[in-house]
Length: 276
Ligand SMILES: [Zn+2]
Image (cartoon, rainbow, N blue to C red; front, side, top):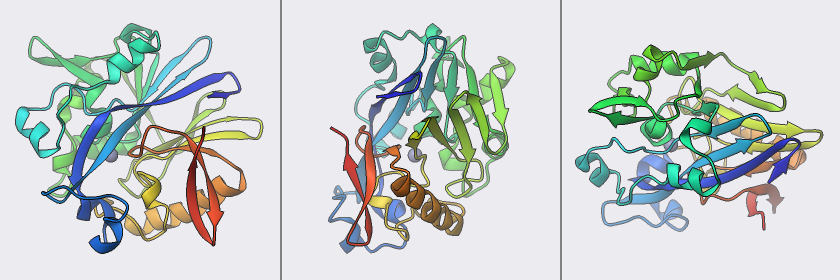
């Protein structure tokens, strides 16, 4: 879709699976499994969505999926049975890795930053050789020094090599990266998670990040157990969902089907309506 000078597309790098209980936090399984059926290991399947944002001078990729570096064991655990689609999806749209000018990760978990790098002679190197990579400074700090709770989600090969290559663009809080294209830090899922907004006039496109990973997380208390600051996720959702309804934002989610839509209110509840 077009927002001012930008053409914005959403596509999936592929699907992966996480424990359904972890995805829905305090919500009982009898409620969430009506929306997301679990497999025999209690996992639910989700897409790993990316955005391609282009104007005359810039090619921006938001999120890079799980990437090509996972081990067979990691692929088995996360139910990833297909190769990552990121580079094929870009090629289909006429974009080569060297065309990309900016990469934005909403946060540095492996399912968002895995395609940032690939192994060349056994060493991880930047997938997009001309791009700067934009993350929140505190996300970088937390990812580089994970603790016992966060360690499983951060794989250093996805982001650490970018520093030596001089490709880091660390930002703080809310920043306009290009006219009408902004990132906003939203502490909740992690300390340094950021959302992405593209605006022109009264039009806004919003990409959620994992503080609201899909349409099933629109009810305020439906918050993943993964979130490090769940009460801040709650308050952020209250504000963002209200604005998205009132200002008729176009919304894309990180872990829903790769579709844009709008949020409206139906019988007092927020509801996602996919665009045609
Ligand atoms: Zn995620």
